[in-house]
Image (cartoon, rainbow, N blue to C red):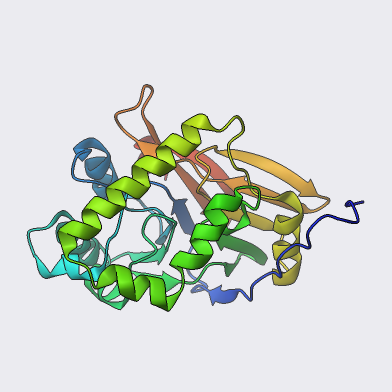
Amino acid sequence: MPHPDAPALPSAPAAFELRVPAEWQRLEFISDLHLQAGEPRTVAAWLDYLTHTTADAVFMLGDLFEVWIGDDVLDDAQSFEAQCCARMRAIAQHKALFFMQGNRDFLTGQTFAERSGCTWLSDPTVLEFAGRRYLLSHGDALCLDDTDYQRFRALARTRAWQDAFLQQPIETRRAQARGMRDQSHSHQRAALVYAELDSQASIAWLQAARATTLVHGHTHRPADHDLAPGLRRVVLSDWDLDATPARAEVLRLDRAQGLQRLPWPDAGAAA
């Protein structure tokens, strides 16, 4: 039983409901690739995966990019962001791509969606597939113990903050984003315990959505957690092809076999 002085959990947000075509047999989920021009191995692995996966649809659940400072970066067709969007749009002509914002790329907007060819997902989204309901989220909104981040998150989602940030020159925004990223990395290194999703809030989200499985990223700690009888939390891996060993895991949801964790490129051969 919670302590009587403990703060009340925030209300579970209304979840968008997604029903996919009945003929789809295989869906795949990735998150936290943190794509950036300075890490070409991860970028190349991501493009290779999108090109060759046998999934009917790929769900990218946040932090696809290391940083996104506004859709006007796409005005330069030679920019890293514009080239990534062009490749996604070409792939989206024959494979369904879904995108959800994360804490690093929450400034993506309508222009990004149009240029990338991705279908936009609100956070959270309920996915109905093979007779079951899965709740999809990036996961950062549920890290309630990280109070500093939650304060920043609430501020940065306001129209006033975003308008003020986006009105600055691109290079000024890039410098500010680098500073915020470095501050975030320092905070993570200094923390004795990394922020984790709040279990009671996760249960509340699942119950409100009438779902049994929460699929999310953000924490970079892939694992399966039993939250309560019949309720569980499945954490996606981040991608880093420069790490030792390299990380590039895909979570596959197969109509016949359920959820499976597969490393890329092995996932491409496991048809």
